[in-house]
Length: 192
View (cartoon, helix red, strand yellow):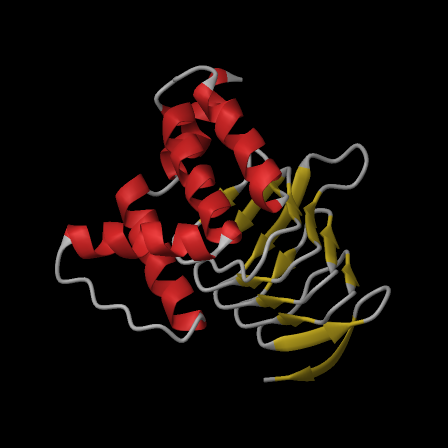
């Protein structure tokens, strides 16, 4: 079991790299300029985003938590998780792997299980991504996907790059690259 966690933590991006890309992507989605000529500019922009966006604060708490878990630091990662839940109702489980450059417009998100979310993905509020009873593997979300408000992605499947999950959709099967799915259960309605 220790080998599993060691391998998972090794796949996580470094804190500085991840937060810098998260700042860039969040700034772009918010329509703000992002020009990082120095590390101090990234730090100041990150603190500004944490102040104006509870979701970004929780996102940074997750990044820090993952680095601390990888280093074997006790207690503080659990406190960071509780702070994320209290400030923005974002619950991201320990086995979730988020690549740099994910955007959360707001809070109220639950991610859990062996889930992987790749760069450029936007996760709207009231989204659940994770497992179904008895299966620990969750979905793998491709690059530049959009996951709409109130949708649920449950179970082991893949969402292709640039896919769009409509608001309120319940996805339990693979979604092809560039495809939009809607409904319960989710069905394709078009492609990009």
